[in-house]
Image (tube, rainbow, N blue to C red; front, top):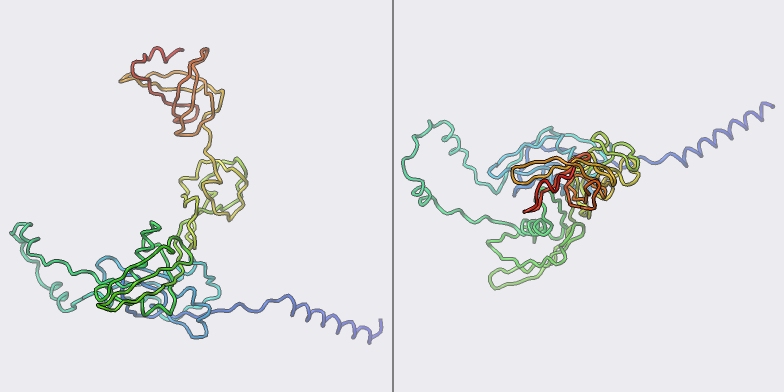
Length: 372
């Protein structure tokens, strides 16, 4: 090969590499920078991500789906709450955010205070330095009678809608994440003692896209509003940590729990590791699969045709006998058994491997049951 041919070959190779690089190397994924504030003030018991963190306007598109995440909640009587950076990261991770594309800066701890809680710093300091007072000698009934009645709690329309959805779905308030539209923020801040609300929640019966039709009454004025939101709920899922073969007995190290934010409630219900260990896989389960109750079957402890030990109770008399199982049975199931050499059958409850328990019928003799 001549020198000119070698040069042309090298140029063609470089061009091919450059073209391949342009074609197959993806562009860098968009990222966002989140700054955790050192102090924040919120109204209500919920502490949202947008209330304790801030980011640039250019990151609004990436952060908008995560802005309304509830990171923590105040206790019943607490007025201050510390939120750690690790807690923020864990909440974002559980909600499905990729932390590799998020940069964190600012403080490592945010001290959050409630603006709607009354707190007299001077009075609290005086109570802290004052010696303990002598116990009161008044009867408890008199102290209760002297106590002023509690003031009605002021609740916003936002609080009422969240409580309505939680009640309908039988979920705890701290398990629900609801993102309302920015156009409804002014309406959601209306307070119940000043105005009254009539909530029609016929279209708010599940997670995902929900809608409330609200009638707002303020003295002689009345107005109707439709509030749109997107609701999700925290759920604990059980995931297969390794492949599980069909008919394999599920072990504890085969499973792992994962906290996730779901936009619909599972029809099979959220199960636990304890409920799955010892069960039998009904099909092949690849790693990473979210397990449900339909993927496993109860492990048979008694098989048809086996001779099993049966404990018969009659009053204070306990007799152990042997019977032939007429059907398969798992723990706690009721199956039919037959006395060996006869056609007499009776029901027993499976209590273990080739073991069961039966209660003798009233008036029946233990000797009749124990036909050994």
